[in-house]
Image (tube, rainbow, N blue to C red):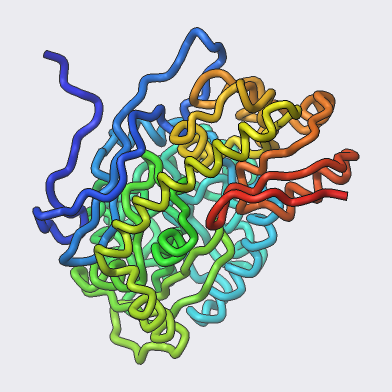
Length: 412
């Protein structure tokens, strides 16, 4: 019998506790970025289910797909989203200030993508190094003058970096730690590489926001862990890394930037306030996530109800993101509802959604279909998408699926 591509965990990814509580089963789904060329060539589907660890409060995916399948060739490019580009500058300013960086200091970013963030540090005359597993994305970064190595971060890579460049003053991991299957190897590598007086920076989609605003669309095979400040702080402490600061980020509809170091620094008020807010919200309790699982199913029913009510109107989606793939497949949103999905990423255009039946197009052919309704699938870029649609003459209505329950926004 052939070995299955995926593995199912039976103990917590962070603390090893073996009494996980099942939360939400999203059914068998294709990989979120497995875009296809033809309807008759559907992608393979895999189970997509979640569990909660009562010991360390980590909400997590039960299935693990090999990282080589998910990330060796990648289709998300940081620099294609206007909001992400604007945020990169603010993020870099905050890191430079918090870490008290000087010209010539080494800034290392894990999963640096096309170098959008590192370019901000280059502009301030810092030395930079990106570690990016997808060679196609690494090539983009190199062409833009960002020193980048095509490899997966781990302890061995950390040792190589130290030998060649020394210990970085800053190690950044934006929206990547939740994606790694070798979680402990990656964190240990950060602890090894970071200079004794250096600053570590991890950005992650806030578990509190996911639970409170019902972001079940953020659950996909790439995204293995859904951290809170509390659960990530516990994991870091296993490797002698101590959290002390935090910022709120607009990325993914609500993220946290956590600052930490090898030295125990007096926690900042913002960090303590986030811990207190999590305690009050109950996000680190199993009951909160069990309610989340129930409400996700109600959300699906309400979404399909709205779509059926509007079935006589011409509808086009906007944003063929990984999270939209989970949402569309869980709800069964296909060509019966959408004539096309607009996406600004040229790598995705010309393909079809992971369900295999809705074409992905640029904005011009999408608007040429004369849609009456735009379904904003990449809802976390709502303002940017509405602005683009208006520039192309769209005056109809929009459906916004999240946060909370789906609702209609009226255009001009």
